Image 1 (cartoon, rainbow, N blue to C red):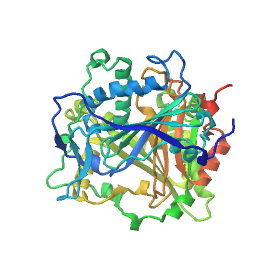
Image 2 (tube, rainbow, N blue to C red):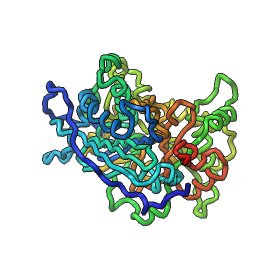
Image 3 (tube, helix red, strand yellow):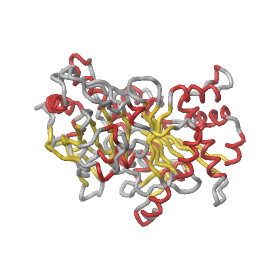
Image 4 (tube, rainbow, N blue to C red):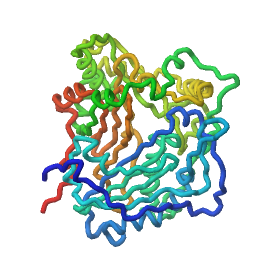
Length: 468
């Protein structure tokens, strides 16, 4: 089946409503964002899940109507545990800083239909597939759940949220608990004792704030007048969707292994491969550049050592992300074998004192609270940098009673960023393969696609083609 153009995909909205938490004991209150929440800024992001054609036996009664009914019945219970997602983001007029008004205003639930088959979309291009089935929602809304049915009988679920409230670990936890609740008919008792931690008070600035020169040098303040223009950004980057098969990841791990005692992780091995591809692309650039960098958004929940923080990080719903940045000479990365580059990756990520890093970041944001701030490596200042956020590290359950999703992938708008960015998700079902959303230079895309490890995503690979 030929892929359809963007003009052929139109969404007919059938209903749009607000769903509120059902627990009457939840009292209206205002939540102060932690400084770890404030620094990612007010950025909308989504997890997009695609589900193949429903079996006549799937779900309670089967069909898309059953999917909608499940959300209508169980979403209020989910919001009891994630009540910030029923709130609204409001800028405090006195401080100019956003805060969260938890008055149970409600999460959005949007239902629509699309007159094409899922298998007809061009999944190699984000803007011709996943981004065409994501609907806009107000900037103050903290959760918009968007359900779409397709002509083939499949459907999509978009978990559209805001980075002020949560990082990748937190929103993944929400989707995972949703699936558990839905399969259990909304009864948390059958899911197990789950207590979501919403206490942001543990991340408080010191008085006076204190941070190192190294951390200060890592970040920059910015606005639209201090970023590249829209045409330059659009012409300099492409958005691609890829898959990497488990066998190829295992092969890279073998190539990056010196001894079994020094066997790199999957992330380290693939990152080393990417760093070497980046170095080759930079070396071929007509503009001379001596260095290139790799950056990782690291979930610090797993890396803090403080006895106070470790238990608090369990089921914490908020932002606890650290940025690890590694830089080296282009020729050094090209010359070194994959194993040595993987060791550089490991050292970059593991050498950070994450307890101190988080405290310094909290203090730094306190000084720059009313400004837009971002890591220089993400903004695109200095040497070419390829960044990664690895959702594949977070356990994700997409089966809420209608089978596993064929795809679950974080998607966002990169605006005028001038760095490369990869969002890595695990292929649902647990076969060890990865799905990736890539915002990269055209030269980088060409290099990756010529090597055979990063393959353009297709409907056939996802199992979304329907045989007549």
